[in-house]
Image (cartoon, rainbow, N blue to C red; front, side, top):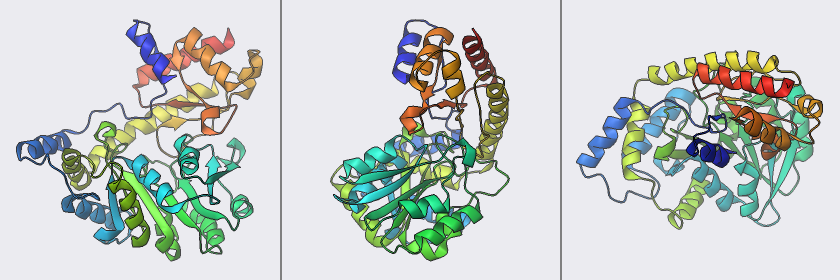
Length: 375
């Protein structure tokens, strides 16, 4: 869908793309200035595989400040994006015969990373009725003697759902009974959050499990730095060491200039992130209201990230289509609006749209979708 939207735009067709999962804001000026300064100072050579001392120090301070978590430098790995951190983890931890628990809707890469490590993703369906959240009962039923990893993402891509402290503790209580299970907490949308319950990372909510929890984060989403490709992971030293080994034989260190920019981001004024999040929240409210007015669309409000994930099964039926894939095709062809089918996220009958666009563009897109559905 993204490729087709790009091609339509190249041809001069008026397409509104709600598919890309990246902020529409520019990287803040102090961060850009830090990168320029790094170039001028000659910081353009190899760095340690696992990240510079300056960035690791900033990451340590971030975890202590935001999450009350203390890590040594040996427990931190800086990678070329949070995605690489997750991939490193799967390759370092999983192998043939192992299983990883993945809740659906899921970020599209989770099950594929597990499969690339020759392990099996065990998919648990969570739908709109349960707020797109995994229950302790579902988790307990999915864990077996082969389970090595449980993947949690809060706030979620694609749903915006966010676990409360109590919900994290309830999941942790189940996991505590399985000493061979590692948890990865994907916190990449941590600061893009507006739910009534404060954000909490899994290791913070479940300190007894911190020694087998890997927390993954990065600067891409919160600081509008998707193209800079800096993510990081923190966790037990033995596992971070294995992840470092994987990285050393694939990409080696992440970009030196981007690391300098990431230091400026993590040590900079947090009000910049708060201001961007204020806009995301306003867009979220407008999008939920607009989607709810479209016949056959059912939408659950999110607590963070910048996505909405409406159930559209009724709209599919209304239009005489067979699936969310056909609906997405109809919308890009007839409404000139690009969205991503829920099937890609393990949730047939849904669509994902990003509201990292201006309110004017979002309202125009929703009007087009509504007209196409009601035609």
